[in-house]
Amino acid sequence: MAVTFNNVNSASGLKNLDEYLLARSYITGYQASKDDISVHATLAKPPSAEYVNLSRWYNHIEALLRISGVAGGGCGVIVEGFSSITGEAVATPPVAGTKAAAAEDDDDDDVDLFSEETEEEKKAAEERAAAVKASSKKKESGKSSVLLDVKPWDDETDMRKLEEAVRSVQMEGLLWGASKLVPVGYGIKKMQIMMTIVDDLVSVDTLIEEQLTLEPINEYVQSCDIVAFNKI
Picture (spheres, helix red, strand yellow):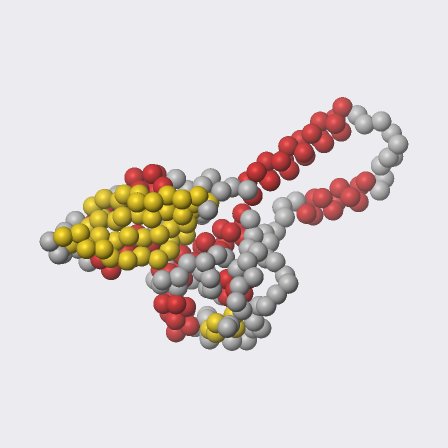
């Protein structure tokens, strides 16, 4: 059944979408799909930081479009003023150098196909082949699902602000997922939060050491530990 959103560029529409994504990584399902592309395309501009969940989702979809595209089918989504996505088109990132390739094709019309290849032409061909191979390698970059334990200083720590502080960390290749509070003892609770990372872009150790346990986030966060780390 298609999900419906109204007035996504208004303050109320952005707030509703932000609340909808509070416990969701994607618009529908458990992987990026055409439903995410449909909603992403209707937003007139990147959402402001006050919409924490929406900003996290928007930045993740932007990163996917730059890296590998989105091919999931989705369940269908309806946004006021737009048609639902049901289909055949697969969202893929723009291919760099398309205009340059077209220009090369035009130049080829003037080339003598039966002439011998020069050393410069051989070298250029090898460089193009190496570039294509490197590009393919980047697109095949793996992803991982990580579960973090985030511990507060004491039972007086505002856990809602702690979660907002953690989710405020945004970078290419990082997507925050669902979270929950887990009792530790003596009235203290810790937060467990899921995240999906692109392995070549995000180091979990660096994320913890240089973001989650430094100012201003360490006002709420005492420590972070990796509970589970699984390749996707």
